[in-house]
Image (cartoon, rainbow, N blue to C red):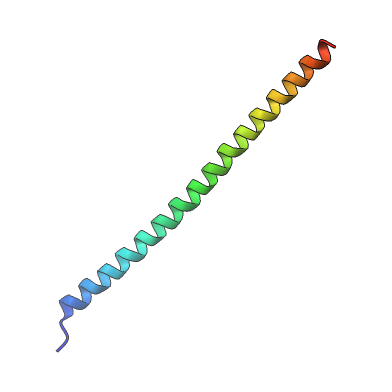
Length: 61
């Protein structure tokens, strides 16, 4: 005989696991976007520093 309580607990476990997987996927995507933004920020900062030093070298030559 099937126990309804066990079936319900199993279904709850499956649903909770799927929710956790979706949460982890969203978190992973968010961290990927944040890391790309940080990398872009550092690249822009380096480019601005190069531009600044290039401007100084042109001004003093």
